[in-house]
Image 1 (cartoon, one colour):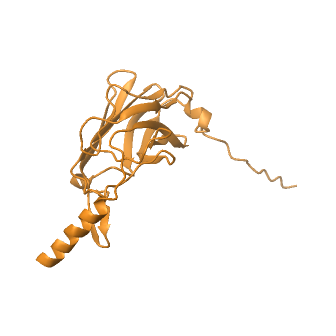
Image 2 (cartoon, helix red, strand yellow; image 1 turned 90 degrees about the vertical axis):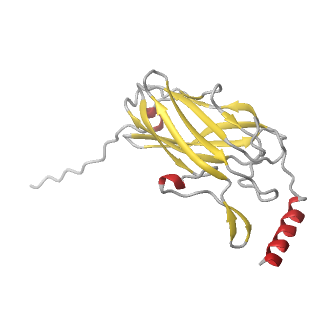
Image 3 (cartoon, one colour; image 1 turned 90 degrees about the horizontal axis):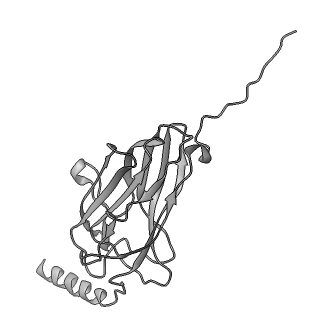
Length: 212
């Protein structure tokens, strides 16, 4: 067993020498993959590096956004990357070291919202446990948008603008060593109404048969 652990340690050290991750980058955030029904409005929060930045990973983070409660309320969250929800009986994102050997870099993911004022605020926070050098995941680059997760709201009024924006005062993405922080670049907004995305109820065609 000790021999196996020694070989694994040497293997990890040799591979980690080839890691090419930028310590601090400027990143962009956007809302995409917008989906809706007559009662729900959903979208993904996505991240990538700004043009020309190197590959990077994210430590502990908080992403916060504001929204118009006259249009939407009561958000729920489904994580896709950068998460660990095992404390709630869920799952954890895992990074593979070698076949069959994995680890979970994040130790906790939680989200909450407050609708006592309008605009309201929602946030998701993940705490980093550790990264193994050379085996960090997910790795973000400057060409591919990577989703954090999907947020869904109940639609209150499809004719009201949702006014979804990132809260720059609360949003922070730590570096791989879990110190502050990567640099925010372009942060998108959603100013349309749910009705603009065809979320309002639609009428189905009705066939009328007249018997003579």
